Image (tube, rainbow, N blue to C red):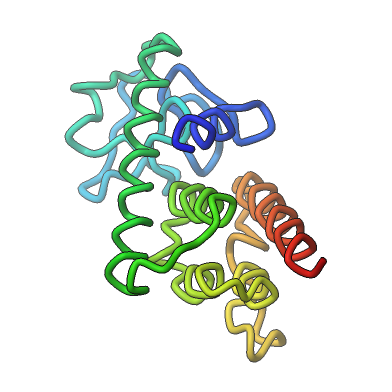
Length: 189
């Protein structure tokens, strides 16, 4: 399953791959010598990222990964594999510790790993995570769309209506909703 998730994340239908450090807010390649602040943010307010969504930490910036340099895809694919492995462990640990090691389908687990990779689902979208583990797919979708699903009039999440320059969030969110709808239709039959 891990290899399948890595393949899906690195496909052209996902955000894509960049061999140089780019700004996750603007999508633009970061110019050589661009500083980051004490929080690891670029002047735009975005974060330096490389490969397929690897957030470049303060410790990695300009030491492990230099601005202006192009890295081989094979090297950055290994980084993606390790990042996904870490997210898979987070998902499995959460299910083990908070859900008594509940048996969930591989399709649900894949969605949870991908949303943990892109959105930090267990921490930033705990109601979504809970709904997915408990096969409450309508609630899961509502948690991706609405800041407060019980009061949709309060507005939509920043991943469903992202800030300027973050259109990839909406595209990914729509793909997750589509995948969840497929799960939902398979369980209704």
